[in-house]
Length: 261
Image (cartoon, rainbow, N blue to C red; front, side):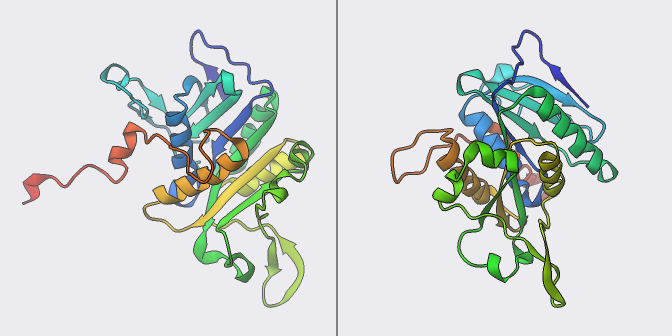
């Protein structure tokens, strides 16, 4: 895997915050990343070249006028906002099943080599597979690596965020052994555990949801993240205004062809 910079761009990410999605249930992380890139009008600075993702090419998903609508986009692109010291990686295709571990290792080594001050992984997990303690209250959870804990301290606890609970490894038999379980979370657990091992400051912010129209889940996840990172300023007691990208017009396919009737 390698990061390929687009021409004439400054691509040092030292001390930047990186936000990236996990390919997880409802594609909530990817929808949230779409909203960030579109709202902050972020500039594409490069792409990730890897054989771990299904190949893809398409039109510019963030087109704002006819001239840039035909710009080519690929399966993993990096956007940047130097004034906010923020970089965003958007992943648009699934990880090839047999290459998930390789993808996690390569991703973590790129994050480390780039010098990001912290990484936020946006993810989701199957709502129907929650255990009893996870059914109550907010559907939002977070995880942070020991290195991230050093960076944030008790900030997230003070904000009354809920940490992702561990569940019994052998439910109904014994509760002595607990494990981290993120069903439907794709590579979330792999990226998190590899980041712990490599001493990378990473936080996972996830939502329990079901497959369907997951746009409301993306807004919920992003508004929650915004209370911490303040990507968009909003008056007290109001939700920030996120700009919906042009590509969402075809989120559920194009209209029904009149020729059918």
